[in-house]
Length: 391
Image (cartoon, rainbow, N blue to C red):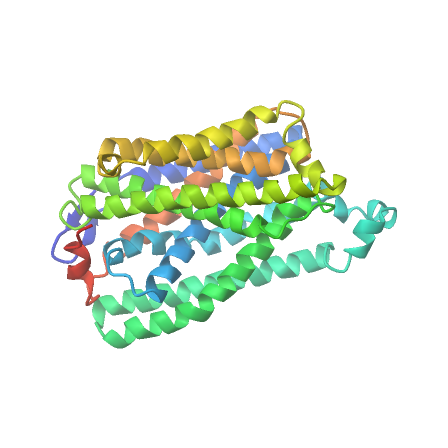
């Protein structure tokens, strides 16, 4: 990768994007064979892998909205990193199509005979039905695409037509945009994940998914930023001060993620109502207790201790390790949300192949977005203040 430092545009985009595309296509082709061998397992693995990469786009859109809404200066220099993620929604919309075809394997409320014999599902049939499920999915993606496209276009326009009015427009747009995003993320997580077990529900569920999404995009920003830094790109603009603040955000949201998970568990444990406790029982029996404890220790305790010190937040090698670690834990978090519904603790080769397959195309799209325009918002008035930011 090479970049023109006067315009921050890429003169050579490197081979990472192309390699990711090739790997993605190859692993998707291999995974397609799994669909013929075991379609039920294919769709379970597909949903888990899909939601993992979808949360990257969720995190990117939230970070962008929040940055504009709060008028933040420190992260202006990394705005394109989050915009590249949020502008992947069209690709993710295409990847949602197999879930529609797999609804019968994933969601037992799509079986009419089951609904007719179950009073709870019958009462929810007005909401949980295949037609309305698809209509809502189309609506969600339309909203996410509209929000991301509008913000991305204004941000790119700022490169060629610097104007403070654009800053105010993006801020005004982000206020209602944040509300709409929060609602659509919440209801999509209800639809695509929580409805795997339609007898169980939690009003904290959307916040839990959101917390994981934000941790995922923060980790991705660190990994992409450090990879560019290794190549001598943005070394003087994306400084240790920015990485320090990203690490502080990760530390904060590790606590928030743990708080959401514990709050949900504690209220259900305290009430001790059988129809509520069954969700956690499934994630403790049949050896799922190993993954549950892995998340407690690996997703909360270890990164909490690992990022507690100031020095740990400013060590590039350690930050890279922690970012990779958190993403791996995020994979297990998605596994924990999806797979206990269907079976005991067992992994399929399709879990990995689909994760790499969808991820390869996502990373390809992400890098195309990132390298297709100036790497930093060169027309943004607050850019120099962001570059000179000190913790």
